[in-house]
Image (cartoon, rainbow, N blue to C red):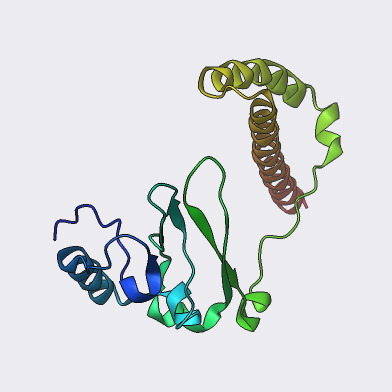
Length: 189
């Protein structure tokens, strides 16, 4: 299925004000096929069946349309608590906000909160590695990122990731050394 220029309201009576209300049958049919093939629903319209609200506007001539959709899997329908549209930055389209909530999600165990083991700051190997890596990360990010705040966030992300990997490696080596000492103790007794 080839999709072209699907920038159209699915239901012009609800999703458009101003301009031609003629339905773009080919585009709407393509979107419908896409939804059917993947069992998707337009969750904003499901939660707001009769609401006239628009995500795009044109000032001259005045035309308002709902051109932006959140297609989600039909089996996730009950997990969406609310939908809303919010102002988006640097675009003439609004964004769509979804609030997802489910009691089962609250029961899922996650890795938890990471807290840096400060003892690695006394490890000469860690200090040496991080001292060489920080300038590399800074140089790499400045090639790609123009905002200094984002460069700083990227460096912090890499420091955190490296600290986690270093700590895991150190713990693994410590555990292996403990096993070796136990084997030597058992073997020598």
